[in-house]
Image 1: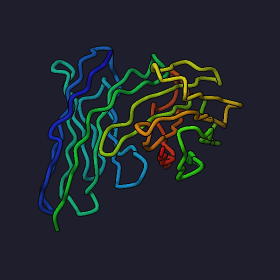
Image 2: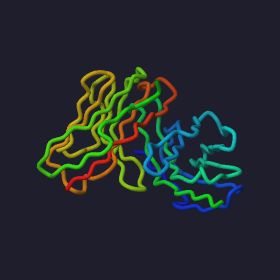
Image 3: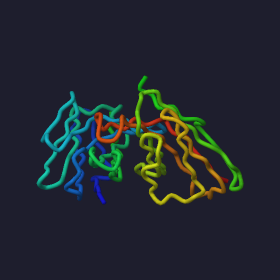
Image 4: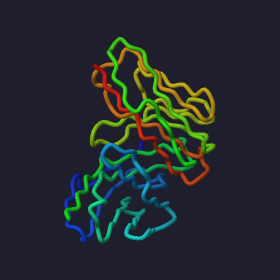
Length: 114
Length: 115
């Protein structure tokens, strides 16, 4: 089955800095890679996703890059703000099989200091 | 309506109790999921229902019993739980296998404490 590794486990930045979180996956059949943000006591919420036929996707201050050959993908947050502080989970899966089963990374606790 | 609604939000039960968690969505999604999440850990998949049929059971102990009465509702029946089962139980839905954006919509979760 799929295995997703996520690094770092904690990340501390100053407001305005950039933050980068990296994930690797093992199953070359995976073709869908979402990123979820989970604030304390809240539900995980999708912030951005990328499919395997795309190398990069941006949405305002958030971008995700995918390297299929190396089987890794990264989340980039620019101009970080204190409200970006949360746990971030990457995930990988195959949209066409297994009823959308996603394998999650272990999570990154991001802290943005004002 | 892009909401997945879970009840109750909090539940405390003894090891001999029987209780149920409920999940509801009205987005027309045909795939529904139960996840278990411990503090600061990723969600762990428990069950997947597709078109009201159980499609995936991730080797979950029989003290957890899922039920999908119709395409909008998903229940998780709990019986004889152990203290280590204390966790946040998340319900999620998706538009269906092989269709849609692939986005999982999560409910707010039911925080379960087993005494």
